[in-house]
Image (cartoon, rainbow, N blue to C red):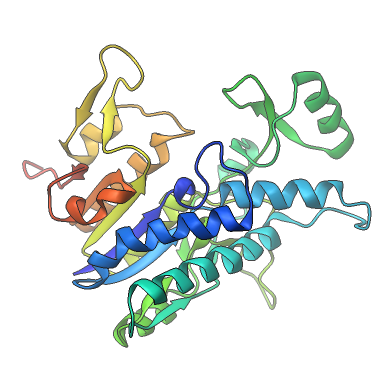
Length: 305
């Protein structure tokens, strides 16, 4: 079976972790340990988030007095792909002796007229008190929004992924028995044109990009891993209950928050609707059990439809 595994942003840095290299090296061992049993039985493509890492680089770039202007987000995404891809590849080499592993820098094509450019929503960088955030926004041309934790952060557009440029290369690597790490942070956002692919000041949602890649690779299963055991209806309330088996329409009906479960739910729903295959959402440490139907939220086609 061919499985695309979408790792959440918490895979390398848990909430409250310092963004130190040693912390990320230790956390990535946990990732490799969880995924290795699947790799023994299936062809895997692993995608990953980069939220904490790109926030760190964006902050450093914005405040570096040696720079005439901060680095653009497409180049920061490329930097995080290289770093996280290297960490994952090395940990997987250790966990899977003899298995070929390749970390691939990948680009995601977006439309320059995507409506997301008129409505920036994705936070990047440090959280500030409201007055300071407003002053910085005026000085640096930011869009800002509340972060849900009492602060304000810069926000950028998150356009929809049209396709992953390197999909055919990933196909060839899979055909040779290689485990592929790619599409980090949703991929480097580019628009198609003549000559050089122009980068854009945006980030692509990692889960939607994983669903796009899984569809184009004709994957059998999309596995979205996060820090909760399954999707919950009415999350955080007294009416909270686990959702264990669901159709795309039922999943969308849950109206999950944009900043947490919402993109994961939408990605799973899109993949199942477009392919008629299966997706699941669950905890990293239960990856093997999720694929074998013993944990997580299974998203399946609407058989009545």
